[in-house]
Length: 329
Picture 1 (cartoon, rainbow, N blue to C red):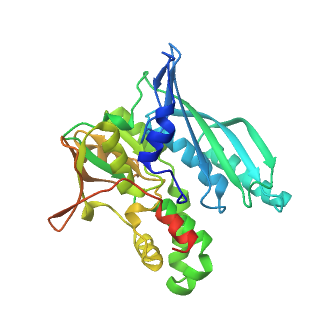
Picture 2 (picture 1 turned 45 degrees about the horizontal axis):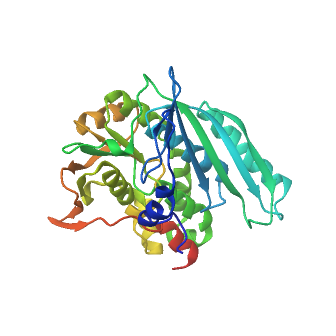
């Protein structure tokens, strides 16, 4: 099998279709594209998500906290706590462990969440740090926003810039190679994109605005997130390629590795389906979050990328572009 997320068709048939959820308290169940599960406890709705970090070791603690919390934010909920599982390779030093733990603690403090438990283990089952985080949040006014809530004629709003996380990971992991090709300034700027991968602010603003659907843009990039939202919602979309914001540093690094920035892991971007996306973009801009209307939801099942008045079908997401670089493809 290819490295990366399991293809959605296989995920549905081999994994998700095996589960039978019978508890009435469970109000958001596992399905393709949904970032979180949700449990109704009566007075409160609890939102839960889990994510591993396997594609990099650089700043793994920072990335892990934000990726987990971003899923909670995509449901419009307030993040509360984290459970951390850390698998440590035998050749790691105590200072390596301390460095990762310091990243976890710093990022949790920044985002006002508590680390409430977890598991830490040294194991020869891994040859580098592997981390998995479960995040817990609570909804505001008992409202859960789902990936599957997009409606025909909704605008599609994208926050920040495509490929932020992947660009930063590549700049960290291939720093010397990229500095020779692109220069230290470009690489230094790209490395700092790691500081922009939280979407908590935009998630809470979009929820208050009345967004119909949100999806945290991770593996598969912007185009993968569009496909997953449409698939979950039973809708189609038209996305305009020239409206998707991509930073210069991302373009240059992707050109160097011959990969597509629109299919590159993009934590820091939130995909939002809503009415009046232009007004939401203005509200997000007011709090310092760049946002752009990149397309619209349609009533049919066609998911299209439009460029120069030509439309091409957006296929289901496959292995992220990051893994192509890491595997040397």
